[in-house]
Image 1 (spheres, rainbow, N blue to C red):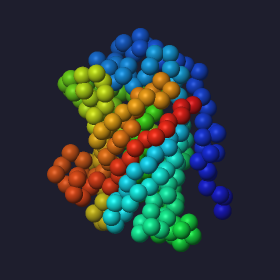
Image 2 (cartoon, rainbow, N blue to C red):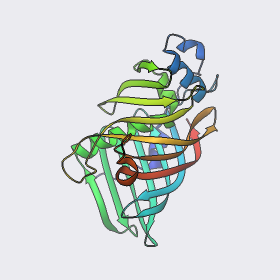
Image 3 (spheres, helix red, strand yellow):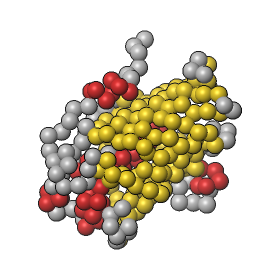
Image 4 (cartoon, helix red, strand yellow):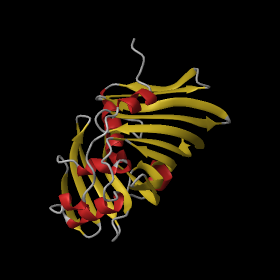
Length: 248
């Protein structure tokens, strides 16, 4: 069996693009799309194909447990999120990923004893939904020609696109400066533990920061049943702070 692609190998495979962000190129887009892009990307910034992130936070296993993680998001191939979480002071080490259209997860107690593994069509489709959501950490992808934009009002922006073989219908809420407040989409999953189906999934952006010409969310609350009264008590399972972002 071939060894799974490592996070370092995915980062090394990322091919930089030789194009810089110029607001004038996007004058034809809806006003809210232009506002978002001009807030998220400084003029002259190289349009990155990948980002490497370091983060920490809490993840809800049986209870809220602290974690540290590193992640690479490479638009052409997928993402790897590699983390260590601590439950009852014991480390759970593993990764979530989707690479070249195949999703998988593998988590081991003490790095030795499997506690959660998964692959197959449902895992892949769910991982694609996560990949679509995390596009907000790589704003350059929204400069691609295959993005379709609409803006129903001065606070909402909708992006339609296809990535990892799955269609995405991603809704943003923005303030008047173009700052991202929430991101939401239907994501394939089974938070109830039954059959997989599409569930409202999203993130609340509590803080943002700038790295190498990009302004991205740096403090996030993420989960299922987004936009409903079930989000906080049942759906929210991930709270993260981005400590570092490097673009390529």
